[in-house]
Image 1 (cartoon, rainbow, N blue to C red):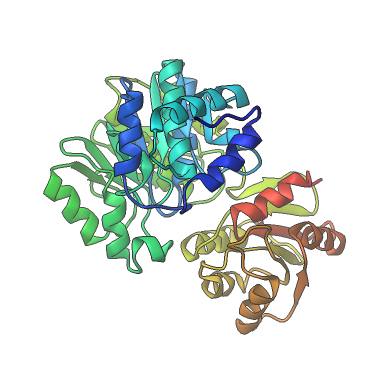
Image 2 (cartoon, rainbow, N blue to C red):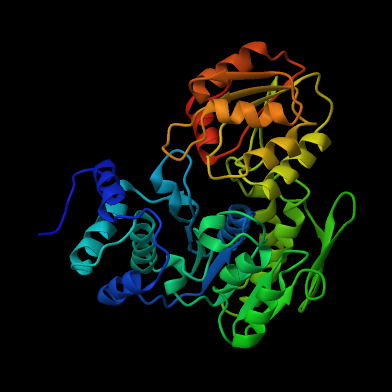
Length: 421
């Protein structure tokens, strides 16, 4: 007897308990269900992996294709406020009914095969894209690449945005080990991209071994900042006079450069003109990626949750301008490098407001406080919830101050639920 539920919340609760492991690296089980469902995309498929920058890259790609008039499917994770954010067509999240319909088809096809929460979601997204007859689909890798559920589908273009240390217990504790896992999304004879300025030798070797058409940031495609605009160079020539992406942060130019390289690789199948590209760059939106809310005090939301992302956040905070006091609202997972993140932000944060996130994987507020104090920071306050931490920061901050909420998707989500402002 197959499972059914009248609400999406009921389905998600079921999926969280269905498979004995929340993360089960391997493709054999989910591939069997894919075959039983007959999920074979006939549209161009872009798969995007990397330690950081995946969400921004997917958002800019989707915005450009949408501006060009294509029906674009986008699968990303995790979500901030609603599961539906993970599966979008033309930048609009799928409805509860559409997602549940896909779940029912998976349930009918899987038989005795157990699937994880993410595997269920990946199959459901592809089912929805096929049913909707999208012109192009963009799928973000959840974890790693080689053994991630997204990798059961054959990418027409695969991209690795960045490679750094994260998820060590699953991917390894060196850039070389992690680079090999991320390179697993590359395909023989197909365009493959890496926007990391120092790609691991393991990634390069794997691409060469399988015969992927690897293009690297620097030698194969590049960008130059020209103060009020920027220029891109690649195999198909140059694109001068480009507007800066609406997403904040200097690192977004590298992401945008990767986006244009991908667009060029698929130009013959889904062409995007220069005007539509510019419009996509100007109109792209993505919550929680150095998102600065209007008004005073300045409120910054960032999902930075590893040292690589924390370094970028520190640079962005430095370049944002002068603020009398910067308050941090901070919550983080226990399996992350809390000490490194705290150390990288120490010079940018004056007062820390820390709390335990509402998830079993969370570091306790006291663990966070101890790590921060060990960096030499003096002003650390502990709270039971992110809501309490944010309320305290908001009460303490003057109009010339800044509040930065970061450390996890859960941190940003909890602040967004409060509807800041």
